Amino acid sequence: MSIDIMAALVEYQAYGYYFLLTFLVVILYWYIFHLYKSEKSGRRNYEQYGKIALEDNVLDEPVESMPVKQSKIEQQRGATK
Image (cartoon, rainbow, N blue to C red; front, side, top):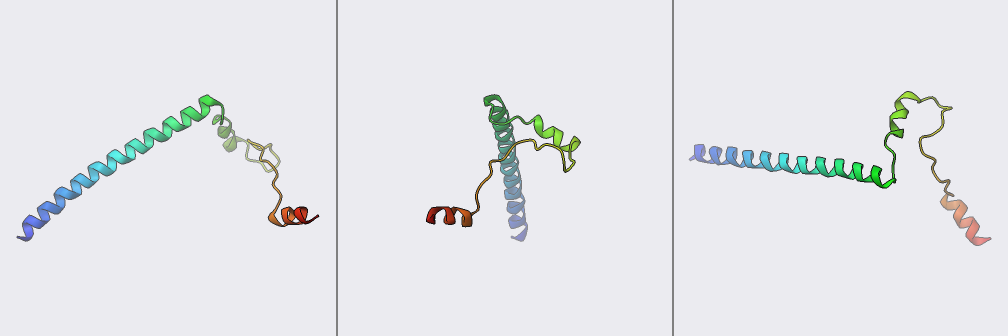
């Protein structure tokens, strides 16, 4: 009887491996499509990020400029004025 249980567990393990592998392949292709679509629409230029490895000095220009945000304390003080 224990041999039958072990055989069933091995079979379920094989099915689980197959479905996990299929799921990960689908996620990988979706991510590649997302990157391609983002670059085509102009939201991101991923070729710029290749410069990070070459130009990693502290004084180099950033790849993207980030908007300056106020801290929560400054926002609260500004609301009370």
